[in-house]
Image 1 (cartoon, rainbow, N blue to C red):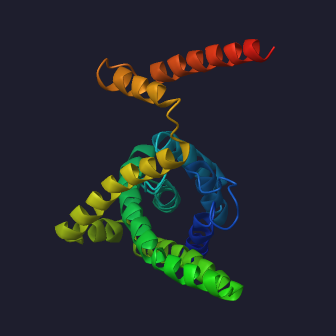
Image 2 (cartoon, rainbow, N blue to C red; image 1 turned 90 degrees about the horizontal axis):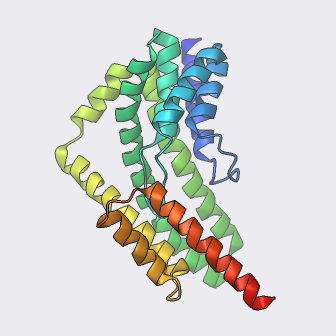
Length: 245
């Protein structure tokens, strides 16, 4: 029975990884939903809900912007909830364990993206040839890589336990950890650059730099900058309405 549960949880994690990649964006990979689903598989949805909600609060501020790869909150929630139900861990212990798991998931996420980057060349060549089947094959190959590199580690972690996961994290060579850390620190800058490439407008550039000055030099919080931006947007909207009236 335990083996079957580990397999089902691993398949669930792989399917949740397809949230936003295959199924649209139903947000089922959020820690809250992931915890409840793991609880249903293990026959304890109440604990799954409690652990999922607790981990949802922990990961609430983690957002992947552009090309950034944040800590993998879904894997952390799935395995944390699994350990909580199987071993009776309390919330504090689960949160403590979920953080290194999510960081390990982050490294695997970067690896998935590096591998999938090779399919861009295949897709571009297939598009030039008009070969739609080859494009479909490349897209699904990338999706299955995400599935496999999520489901297999989750199964291993569930079957062999939390100690095995911590051992893997601690056994990673420093050169690999440092390299992945450097890569993950560069990806947010790349993501912002890609967004600005599409969204940057010289007419609104002064407002961008105004927000930067308010936050970086005057110490205004992000919430404060947001309120100021909302006020500026409201004034500009009213002015535009008066001009068109």
